[in-house]
Image (tube, rainbow, N blue to C red; front, side, top):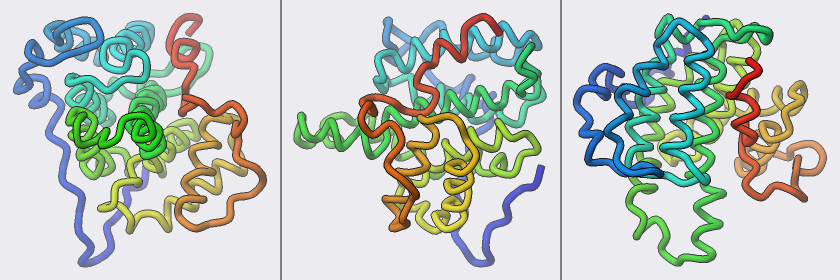
Length: 248
C-alpha cells in the first residue's frame, strides 16, 4: 500500500488517538446510544478485533444499530467512529470475508462512510430546512463533524490500497470527510478518485456520492445524478444489513 505524502509546507491533519486510548479513556456509560447508555460498547468494539470474520461483521452491524440507528448521530457515535477508524491498520482488518474474499477493512471503511453520510452536508442541509439552526442546537452532530480532518488522516492512506474494494470504500469515506473546509486542498486529487468510481463502480449509492462531490467542487460530472429520483436517505452502503449480515 502506498501512503500519501503531504505537500511540502502544507498543514497536516491532526493524528487520530490510538484506538486503545479511545477505548480506555472514553466514559462510555455516560454517552447516549439508540438504546440507552454506551456501557456495553467497549465489549462490542473489542469484538471487532476477533479473528473470526463472522464475529467481526455481525459486531459491526450491532454497532451500527447502537450508534447509527435510523440514520441518527448519537453521543456515542463520535468515539465509536474514532475507534473503528483507529483499527483500520490493525491486522484484524485484513481478515478475509468468506465467499467474497474481501478484506474486513473494506467493510469497516464502508461502515464509516455510511455513518459519515448521516452527518454529511446533504443531510444537515435537509435538516436545516425543517429545523432552523439545526447545527447550533444539535451539538452532537456539530461535534462529530468537527472530527472530519482527524478521521481523514486515518482514511486517506487506503485510497491507494492494493484491493479495489478497499480503495473504493476509502474514497467514498474521504469524499464525505472532505466536505470540511479544512480539507479543501485535497479536492483536486479526490476528484480523480471520484471520477474513477463513476467510470468503474456498479454501486449506485457510491456513484451518487462521487457525482455530488464533483458537482459541489465545480466539476461537470457525466450524465444525470445517480439515484436522483430515489435518493432520499440513500447514502453509501445504505442497505447496511444486506452487507453485514449472513450469508457472509
